[in-house]
Image 1: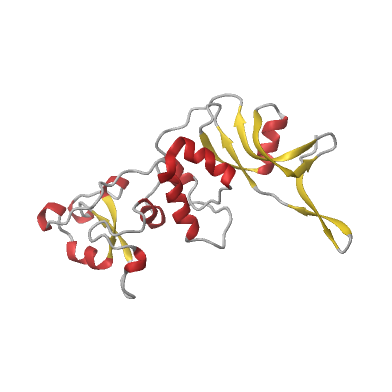
Image 2 (image 1 turned 30 degrees about the vertical axis):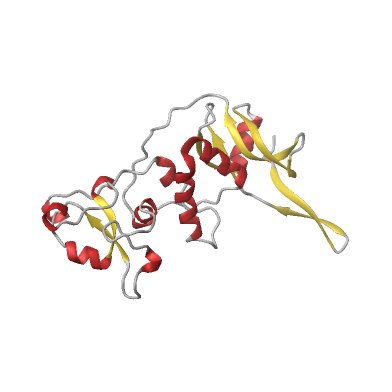
Length: 218
C-alpha cells in the first residue's frame, strides 16, 4: 500500500484546493501513558499494520490512500506495551535547566523578566567544578548573574546561599517533548499522566519559541 498523505480541502475562488498538512501525532503506550510525538506517516503506518489504534482524531481532516480514507490521527495507542525508562538522561543544557527551574533564580527568587538589562540567567554548580562537583542535574541550578558571581567557588553552606528547591533530574517527558507544540487534545493525556506541572514546563518552553512548530531538543 502506498504511504498516505494528509490533505485539508478548502475553497479558493470557487475551486476546491487541497493543502498538505504533515503534522505530528501523540503516541501512547498500551497503558495509555504518553510516549512521544511521531510523524504522521509513521503513525498511519503503525495503524495500518495493526500495531496501533487511533484514540483521538480530527474528523475534519482526512488521509487517503488507494484503499483507505481515515480521519487524521491526533493520538494513537500502541497495541503492545513497551518498556520505557522513567529517567531519560541527557546532557544538561541551559534551555532545559532554566525551564526546570521555571526561569527563576534559585537564590534570590527573581524571574528572568525581573532582571536588569545587563543581568542574565546562568548555570550555577552547587559544588563547583573546581572542587570536584559534577555537571549533572542534581548539582546545577539556575542563578542570576549577580548571585552566581557572589557565590563564586563557594559551597552553599560556606556562604549561606541555598537554592529554593533541591535540584532534581527532570522526568524524561520534560526533555523529550520540550519545545513541542501540543494540541489541547494531546495535552489532555500529558495532564492525566504527569499533571499540570509538566504542562507548565512545556508551556514555558513553547512561549519562549512562539514562531516555531515542532523542534529538535538539544
